[in-house]
Amino acid sequence: MNNASVIAGGLIEKIGEEYSGFVYRKFEGDQEVKKIKEDRAIKDHQTGLELIAKSLLDIENGAIQSNEEIHAVGHRVVHGGEKFSQPTIVSDEIVQELKALSFLAPLHNPANLNGIEVATNVFPKAVQVAVFDTAFHQTLPDYAYRFSIPKSFYEAHGLRAYGFHGTSHAYVSRTAAKFLNMESKTFNAITIHLGNGCSMAAIRNGKSVDVSMGLTPVGGLIMGTRSGDIDPGLLLFLMDHLHMSSQEIDRLLNKESGLKGLAGDNDLRNVLAKYDDGDPDAVLAVTMYIYRIKKFIGSYVAALGRVDAVIFTAGVGENSAAIRALVCENLGILGIELDEGKNEVRSPDPRVISSEKSAINVLVVPTNEELEIAMQTKEIV
Ligand code: ADP
Image (cartoon, rainbow, N blue to C red; front, side, top):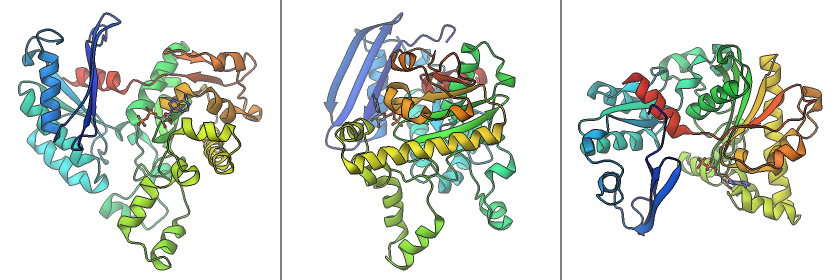
């Protein structure tokens, strides 16, 4: 951790399906020295993490000699509610508290708990640390996080905006301040995380003061399959007039909406290809996607008063010059102007893409949630 070098990396996806994807990569210095990629059956998370441990310990391709070399395991836990605003060492008591919070993130928190349990079995000597996706946004003022419904719903059930992708917003804003030689504690920024899930945050003096996602990760921007903000009256219409159940509405708004609902595909690369061919559904989807981001930029400029940087990150934000150009088009009135040439540069490093004249710096900062989780984990351990 002293030089934050990655000694191994990897991914397991589609656990429990007929074939799961498994990738293991070993690094020496900055060089990838081995890559194993295979499809194989991985029935559950225990089996998956055992495979990871076996790969890490493998005599030929492994990166460690013994399980005991792992001092800590950092877990990304989606929902920490109002209780957790800091990384937390997991104990039996904490597990119970996380279980109690599962009602706020029924898809994610139980899976995160499963990960913690399995990691405890596989690395019994390691300290397990939960790093919360909501934690960075616990600095929101009440006028930003409360819903304008009676107070009792907040007090009795914790119904308020929490915001997500906190680890990413924290990492890219801190990295940008450092890159611009500015002090984090006086740095004001708008961070735009555009991946499959999309969210934006307003950051004042290095702290999150507003966020586009709300109680759940379905609010705010238009995403791959999620609707983002909609009129709450729409839900009543779906229930009363179309007789849809809560499960059906959940599926509609989380899995069938966003770019997929508008243009039939959740991968922005495919939607952009259709956009370039003039497909009307794709043109509308991209126009709406961009329009929503622009409106949030405008509102966050108003919320912050002074903005040092607008920061793009995640799959779309880091890789799509076209989306960045469309977002920043005609924002001169806010002091935002891109340099076309700089915007086209592809690089794994943080970079400025605004013109000399732009009053606000526009940056691309590749996110690194694993590193941020590792750093926070190290600090607390
Ligand atoms: P996740 O939210 O799952 O972590 P990522 O941050 O990896 O997702 O982002 C995935 C998204 O990034 C996909 O929708 C993909 O289409 C999009 N993406 C990746 N590269 C490009 C690109 N060059 N142009 C447009 N979209 C891209």
